Structure formats: structure tokens, C-alpha cells
Image 1 (cartoon, rainbow, N blue to C red):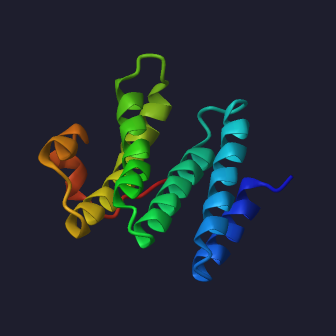
Image 2 (cartoon, rainbow, N blue to C red):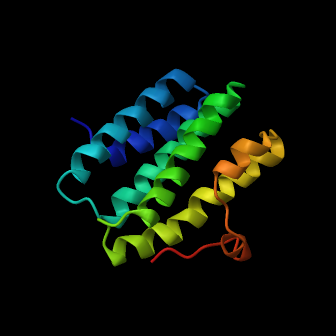
Amino acid sequence: MQTWKVLMEDGHRCVSEKSWLDAELCYHNAVEQIKLQWENNPEDEALLMAWISTQHHLATIYEAQNQHYTALRYLTMPHQWMMSLLRGEAVSDTFKALATQAIKVTLMPLLDFSRRHPICESCFDALQISPEWLKDPHPTIH
């Protein structure tokens, strides 16, 4: 069984070759591998960032195929999950701090997408974007 890292590399190669279906399969399989590892280590920063990255790569694939609604779904999913982590009471302070930083990572691609493909106001409002998150467009993840 291939690791999520190898699957991500294969997905990147397929994207560069414009083999959209193969890339999609690689990224979906990478997500499954990440989820399996998460079960044992739910606060692993590398897995969290890999999951977000994989979702964003899937969004890129769908956008390239003019499937904008699906692309938006793969951009909003990580952002909304980070928002739910911030509101969650069962989440450690360390993971909440990571989620705060990750929100910047999830937010910028959403904003870029909304400039290319305007989204409705209610969908935009559902993103719960805070002005503080827009101050630093280049977040630092430690």
C-alpha cells in the first residue's frame, strides 16, 4: 500500500500531465491514508496540513475541469472544519492554536477562488471570515 506522501507525489505528476482522473484518484487515496493515520494521532500537525493540502489539490483539479461548485466544496471543507475545531470544547489548546493558523491557510485559497468565480453572499458569509485573519496573507505554520 502506498503512503499518502507517495500518493500526493503521484497526484502532482498526474496534474502536470493533465491526467485529471488519475490525479483525483491519487489525492482521494491520499486522503484515506491520512485519515487512517489520524485515528492514532488526531493532533498531528503534519497530517492536518497534508489533509488541507490534499483538499486544495482536489479543488484545483475540479476547477481546471470547470467544475466550480465541486472545487468550492473542496476549498470550504477544510476551512469549515478548522472553524468547528476552534468552537469545539473537546479540542486541546494546542490544537486550537494550530487550527487558528490553519484557518489562514484555508482562507487565502477561498478568497482567491472567489475572485475568479464569485460566490453568493450567503455562501461567503457562511465562511465566517474574521478581519484579523485577513491581516497577514502569508501565515507562518510552525
